[in-house]
Image (cartoon, rainbow, N blue to C red; front, side, top):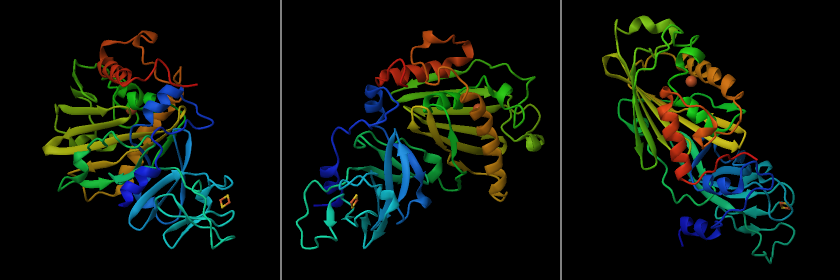
Amino acid sequence: MTQAQLAALTRPRQPAIPRHCTFDPRDWEILSRYWHPVAFAADVQDKPLSVTLLDEALVVYRTQGRIVAARDVCPHRGAPLSQGWVENGNLVCPYHGLAYEASGKCVHIPSQPEGPIPERLCLTTYAAQEAYGLVWVSLGGGDVSLPDFPAWNTEGYQQILPPSIDIRASAGRQTEGFIDVAHFAWIHHDSFTDRHNPVVPQYSVERRPNGLRAEYVSTVSNFPKSMQHRAPDGFVWRRVFEVDVPFFARLTVHFPENGRLAILNAASPVSARHTRLFVPIARNFDQDLPLDDVYAFNRQVFEEDRAIVELQCPEDLPIDRSQEAPILADRSSGAYRRALGEIGLGQTYVR
Ligand code: FES
Ligand SMILES: [Fe+2]
């Protein structure tokens, strides 16, 4: 039997709702079917790492060339396995030393080395994979495919992984903010925009089976303020937003001289009110400039967003558009909310 088959056998078909779940249970179940990022791939090594996804505490580690994600609760007496260590490829619990192989099965009980090993001593494991410099987990089995971020693996593109950002807001609010073109002039006037250029020209939004594609053409520069002289006079900026529900949003910005900047806004729903934002970036220009400048600019822009998104009320994203008052510039938000509604998310998904 392969390791994948073993993992499938030990994986629950219907994951249990976490004890202190902050989501509506039906919405939690829907969100659990999708892939969400939980950590940088480089941070997942043989030292167990503690992360939280959809209110579920997880332990994530790498052993024998594969990534394992499991509920961070030892089935013996409930100790956190993330406090343990990996030895001979097995995860060792710090409390009584029970060792679990990558499939989740207990293979050693130090206090009774000759056995028996009860069948119930088996971890709850989840589907995990590595992509775009991140580790992704699906609590519901990973039957839905992980969406593409093609620029990441395109030859000639530099891969950049700025530090993650923790936001006290829902992943839906954050993701909608990422595709919102009307806020540029107001929230980002210190970093790259201009309050005197607030008009949003009409733009196209197309619904896709799993989300949407919006194409926004404007005179809003994407260079940081200190570099805006680099765009020729009258340069027209093209931004293409592509979203896969629930929280996988890509932005491709067309720079002068065929420069392309591709940003993946990968919002991880830690809880209904807490998002960990990962932003893998790929670009085909400026590859000799210091990465620290990219990290600083990225942080400035997303901190500007964070400051307002954390204050929005209600804190969850109303799926029913009649709860707020949309304007013409909100076409992409409207399509996003419709797409979330179509996968079954409710009017509100915070408890
Ligand atoms: S609680 Fe983990 S070995 Fe006892
Ligand atoms: Fe923004």
